[in-house]
Image 1 (cartoon, one colour):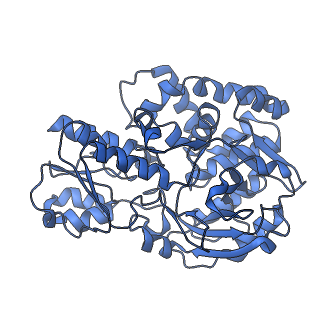
Image 2: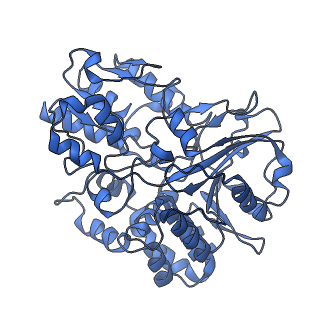
Image 3: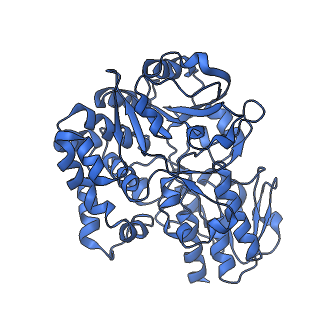
Length: 455
């Protein structure tokens, strides 16, 4: 949608062909359990949408998009019945983290205070001539090491280390790998700079606003219109493909050079996720009531436990005590469930394409921090990696990030051409391009800008 809007803004006639209905891919809101319960199929909490330079330039609020800010971006419960709360205000966060408060400020403050300057530069391919070289050099020095090493070097308290580990685990890498600290830094910085909001009505509200704005520019969206081959579309000046390398080879392989196709075939997908959507009779009964302040809860215990969980996943195993990411949006947007009822979703990382049933282990983690949780469940919908891919063909083996985020693919994804392919009129604009996964529109924005420049 971002790519389509950029092209339409430039005066091109734009048509979007979307395989599913409603449009949105991982940003859809659907009735997945019981009548009246509206669940986010994929993304639910949207710091990158709120902090996106491109989205911020669009009048999306004119089309009904409204972000709701929970009082705290994220909660991380522990076994002692308390929770580490990441406060949005940097000063409050520093006070709440006690002995690590000054270090937290030193680590994240310089980036949070200059987010509007930083965001356009980190949400694009790596540049040899950055506008803010010292700021980006600082981010590189702090972001390249493993999250485990940064946590031990910067923080004293096990509570702060656990919080940092939960942020880093969004990388779907082992926390002993390089670059995992970069994920933790960016997620913490967005928490302070723009918050971790939810869109009223669910993720579909973002997609609907983008569709409406595109329509105002003359663009057309065709839902339930999968494309098996680009040739079937007839003549076109540009084709921007929001697909992963595997789909690009399927729909455009006859237009691509052999060397380029070989590079795409070497592209590596990341771990998958095992996801469950819940219809609930009441709010989740957290032992730490502070967890009710946030739409996002990280369930994993200590840094050491999270390291073990994510290391198992990265080496093809299934964690006994998986790190679980949980969203509870109806605490702040009651319109998405019948009166007095609630929804939640939770997922954990698993090896790509896994068919192992993680439900008992996932719910054991939830019961660990919210005893009696199962008693609140009215209905659940379980999504294995294969089930996720069946609803969105880009989620190869349940990979929600568009590809492994290891160092080579962090720097060059899907190839060193980034958005360009070997065909001058075909581009790729999915999360398999920089800056990677997330609802921010910057993959499409960057790809469309390049395509227009080359035209």
